[in-house]
Length: 222
Image (tube, rainbow, N blue to C red; front, side):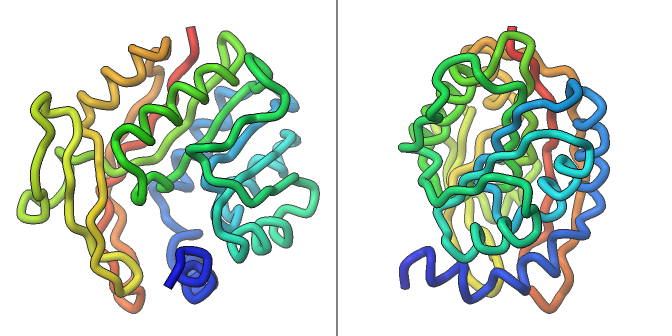
């Protein structure tokens, strides 16, 4: 089954389970406090647009989102009628307005199916598109916060690992950076971390997913 079909089968249950994530909701409020009024924001891997883009739009910001799943984009358009949402792969996507055009980029729990090289490419792109002083706001799972029994192997530098995870009833293998790996990657692309927090979210039992120790941070482009 291809990914668009896979997401189509879980989109409603995913939104029901994760839109009320207290860790994400708290992070959104902290991140909103850094944003300038009427910021131009790109949400990469926007999912259903809820709760993040709903909150950003309510705060008066201009929202654009991309996701490779057509069903997720359909939900985003319904949840945030004033936003602009496009079907696109975050790795190959090129923002049409070019360099230093965005005030903020958000990426929330959307990197699980990408390689280390893909993630490095994405962060480099986001750095190019952000204005100096713009913000990169992310919620990720860090390898060093993950269940050690599910870590398959770290890369030689210890910055990234392959891990096994259970998500929405499926067993997957994904790539996670460690927290120090994220800090090195951000610094290499001209970011400084302003705000960071790690907190655990326990998904409802009915969605059959691993607990999520979420590393949340706001970084500013220098």
